[in-house]
Length: 224
Image 1 (spheres, rainbow, N blue to C red):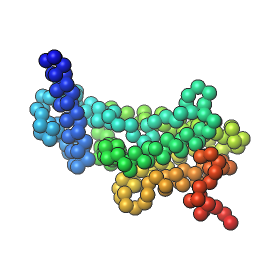
Image 2: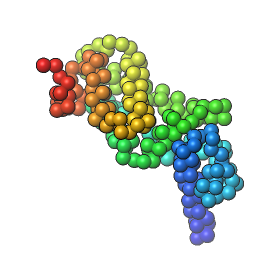
Image 3: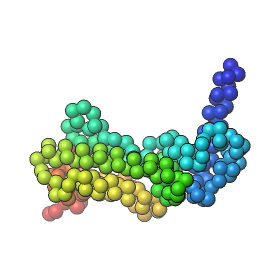
Image 4: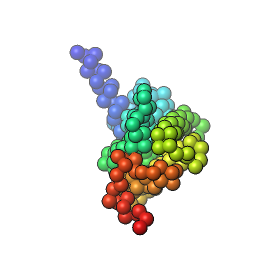
């Protein structure tokens, strides 16, 4: 009983440290936040930090792993046999991710830290590598989905699949980053959906991905 209580207390301390790190990283940046400040914010000792984390980079990565960020969830079409509509699944995943960004404060805070509040200095090399690995995996997933969708639509992409996937990743990531700078500037979810569909149209896909039926908003921009 005592051992279990001790384990639960240690886990609670770990969560307090990560919560404190999130708040301080967002408020003053990662490089300007010390482990001592995090410990004080969490009501813990500096020794408690080193009990749970090797260094600041280890703590940062643990903070990142507590949430699933946009562009880090592979499309369902990666399942054996693929998807009947891989682009619809990418759109569904994108809309879900953008909705989380708008409604989930923790997801928004961690993404803001990861994109705007961290410097990839030498001691944060593992953090940079994590970011690159996630980016590369997402681009590969997008490329597979685009190639599969192009085959099923019987079209030829106007650029290499890898290049189209990079563009899609930059499109979604750029929308999120700009929205975070000023959430009042535009509505993230509807803007993301419409921009995604326009991008697909530019690649030559003949229909909207979600069931093939344009929305009322799509009709507003359709040619007469």
